[in-house]
Image (cartoon, rainbow, N blue to C red; front, top):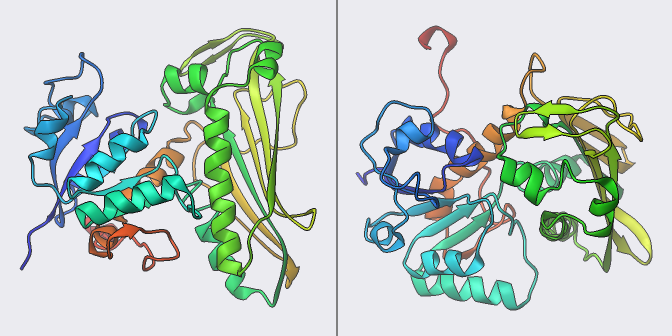
Amino acid sequence: MPGPLRVIQWATGSIGTHAIPAILEDRNLELVGVKVYSEAKEGRDAGELVGLDPIGIAATRDVDALLALDADCVLYAPLLADVGEICRLLEAGLNVITPAGWAYLKDGAEKERLEKACAAGGVSFHGTGIHPGFSGDRLPVILSGLSRRVDRVRVIEICNMSVMSESPEMVMDQLGFGLPADQARANPPPLLDVMSTIFFQSMDMVAASLGFEIERYEKRFEFATCPHDVEISAGTIPAGHVAGQHYQYQGYVDDEPVIEFQTYWRMTPDLEPNWPYDSILEYRVEIDGEPPLALSFGPVTDGSSTEFGLLATAMNCVNAIAPVCAAAPGMRTTLDLPPISARGRFIRPSAR
């Protein structure tokens, strides 16, 4: 019988922290290497970096050493993804799974580049996560199977980010929380363009599953401030600075919005303006049509943490490793792969 699939975890941030334990506990997977980006992490035991006992794998910044490990797959989860780095991994014969985007690409130079790299290495590339990768694409596709007619698809994400363990670099620098509102409006945070791209990809996948193409896209954003200082896990947001963000992405056909994503992120209940959404973490999928359909899900939680979202993102990657490694070479989306499930992760309550 073939042995376990050999996996490299690329980055030990919020996703890697959840992915590494999940890989270690799966008898069908073997963690063989861990990539880090900072000098402070290099050489340290990867288990200790994610809060575990030592596991005997030293984290490294040496890409050549990682490529020499004869691995099957890389779970690629850095703060900022690099398509050139991804192509290098693919060309070296490593399947790549990432929560950083690429859930669906229509024709274009970037798709051609990635497909060429997949062909050179004889491997597959899969973009996934919780949103995109599940809530805004896979879930609407599945729900639409109950429809006689689909008029419009709407996906709403609501998140209290104050208790999320994302890094200050992500929350403050890339997303722009804590900025003066006027500055954020005049110079939108750098991750917004990336977010627009990946959400438009999710819309394209939903449209493809329903048999049409989106003709144009629109996006708008709104920032809310707090009347007092707010302490969050990533630092302090001063009074009068950005403590809430609302994004709307729309895909149009014949000047009608047919697919819409709404995102509401808040750091405190006290926002100006205030929005009517205050869940700790919730995703809502609504399909206007016949019959009209609505589905929502979120964590069963005491409200003290939104780690559910990070864990779910990581697990949608980890649970995809075997199907992606078994897939034919090329970019593989949810529409190409068999259903992703938590295969091998069932544990009877009495056996825990």
